[in-house]
Length: 342
Image 1 (cartoon, helix red, strand yellow):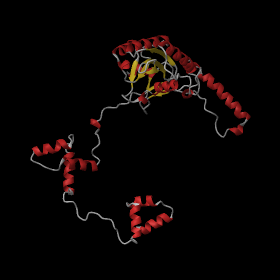
Image 2 (tube, one colour; image 1 turned 120 degrees about the vertical axis):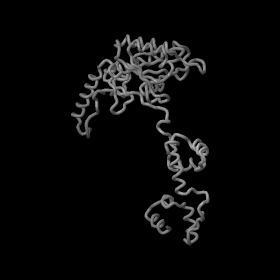
Image 3 (tube, one colour; image 1 turned 30 degrees about the horizontal axis):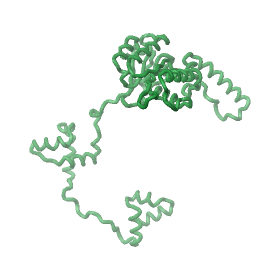
Image 4 (cartoon, one colour; image 1 turned 30 degrees about the vertical axis):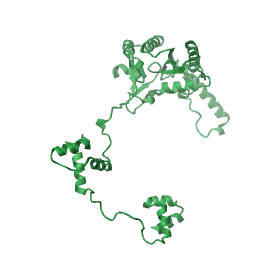
């Protein structure tokens, strides 16, 4: 073993890595070298423990634990039940140890809480899939907040509706979605509205309003923020802007004024990276194709003037096609056919 280690370290291997492969520590190797390699000086058990299970006993433990009678019970239930049947196989700790060594202590599928993904949705145009959420805005008193209700179009990223209130309620949300549907001229069975599982999202008033409007509700999994990524990303854009106030808002009107300024900037000036750096308002109105076409011509002319500057194709200015929310291969649902899907 020492000669093999010498050969490995001479070839450039690290002693610690080589020792790990053969199952000894570098300190052991150092001790062996001091002893001039005179045998293995490690101490170890020379006899088999008297209480060690035989292979037959071990197999019986596994057979009992996986039998139809006991496969749905824990060892703490198995052992007393066997005792009532005048049978002793092993203790609870032995059952647990054997099952752990056989990697049979994991949760079974039927005992795990359901975590079904929300249905995948695909938007091929504006006013097909909306995402909405509520976020906090700091108020003048510590621990008190204003609540920003914000609806956005997943396809265009445009903020289609918002309001700031002093409390969180399903009534405010219901009133806002009704106004948005009126302004955007949403027809029944045209729109899917995605949100998390908060109280205002799943409250009776909100559910009744969506049913009246013909809007289908979609919800994310509990405690899973990335099931509602568009709203979370939008709130990040808002709160990490340089213009976001460093101090709390003095009052409700100040908060509303700041949010109005942000929404105007975001919809009409912000070049959104997710839609080829066009504004959400242009994409919502179908003007992004013309904007991107002009950019493509600019790049084409620049390449013709200086072809050596491009080793490959020019930047991709093709309009973004469909947008998916919570995509899952083979399970995307077109929002335009949501009535049939429902």
